[in-house]
Length: 85
Image 1 (cartoon, rainbow, N blue to C red):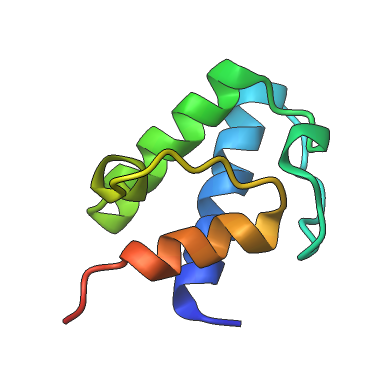
Image 2 (cartoon, helix red, strand yellow; image 1 turned 90 degrees about the horizontal axis):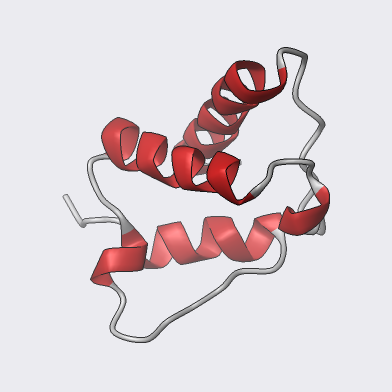
């Protein structure tokens, strides 16, 4: 598991606790994002929190609209647009 994936999981768990007040569900590679229990506002907070934590937002960097369905697609999308150091 990459550091980026760990960071995404950590931020998801933090947002989950803020939004739901309980321990976050386990995110598997094939977890359908819409089935996690976060609503659209929760996901907006999640993506905004990731931007703060990671320093980039692939949704603004991508030229084409992309809507990842699974957790692994979400992570791959972030990996694709992660700034190269």
